[in-house]
Figure: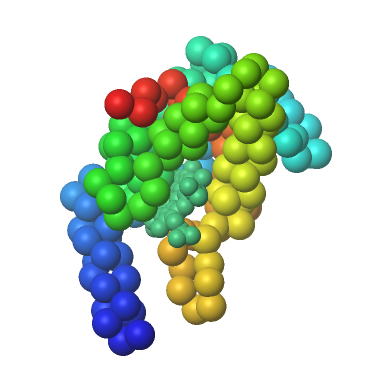
Length: 151
Ligand code: HEC
């Protein structure tokens, strides 16, 4: 148990060092004024998939808020899950219907992961972004992540 704790602590000091190197430690509010507004109700599916402007905004928002743990250009160094794998998993399903259903479920899972963060017991593996990132920002980040090939 102690060993695991120490391991997690050292992983996070590495993450902190990486973050320091890139100078992006504090969660950044994202300017979404150029995107189609989505209203107050949280959507289940990404409305911005393939939208050029959303991908541009999402790329910058990703680099400011996520890259320090999930890797520059969404290439994880192993500290945190490689988010490109979420897309790749759906592409491995046979048939359009199953692929689409998988992507829909991934959208919702992605959104909930970002809003709520990843916390177990007293360990914060990933901070909650509810209150920092609007749903426009979250879906823009997802639209950007979707453009990153798994290999
Ligand atoms: C402080 C580091 C950190 C930051 C910053 C961070 N994450 Fe994470 N994220 C993690 C870790 C660690 C996990 C795995 C947690 C676990 O073990 O449950 C994770 C899990 C996830 C998952 C679930 C992945 C899966 O395969 O289950 C998603 C989606 C995700 N993060 C998206 C994001 C996005 C988008 C951002 C930026 C807005 C972000 N994260 C910022 C560390 C971070």
